[in-house]
Length: 291
Image (cartoon, rainbow, N blue to C red):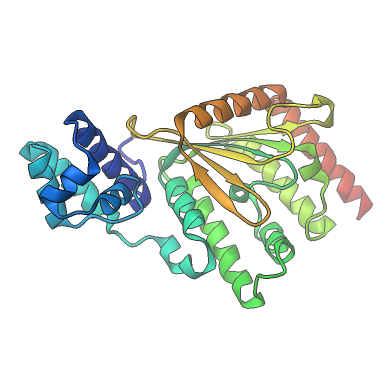
């Protein structure tokens, strides 16, 4: 926990949740707070959901209305200052939607990451060549000049696997993803070798399951699903769902609970870690004999 990564996105989320929790404890409405602080109800609502930044001056005004102690204000001030730090993903803002940039920021500060990927290898586990093939083939609207920066940003996300307090990654990968020849057969051979290496050497933090064809129908069949968990107990799990053209973050508790239960059941139905590693090796060797 001492080495837990600090992400401005996660800190903004915690700051907003703490402020909302205190406001609701006092029974104050957004409009009532706005009248006393000059922060409009819409602006305060955006601050509480981490979509608008809070200045130091406005935090002090909120602290007065919320009757916060000096220690409480000091904690929130530290959080607020951390929301101001510039992050590596800010350099790629022109490439992605605001929602996806927020997802990257949450991922950067997450404690755990659970995912089901039916047809593709998850981004955190991709090789550069696999990522390049995915990006080039993923959309006709991606400009050639943007391919390189998109690869860079995808690989930058993978630093979470190598930090002192690495993210706990649990993925269930559809068997189709192992055989779908993204890029070339050589690209797939190297990609499968990377999966095997990570599963063999990093199992303490990286758990790779394969969903075999024999599993049949399961709770998350036909779609991708990612669930992020955080170090702070105040922060709820959040879901990222992505379609061909869009992605969205979901934080509604009942939806997150249902999707989390579905993902857990799907992972339980997938092959265990050793059997998954074996099938990854089998597919890789099969491809090697065909080159």
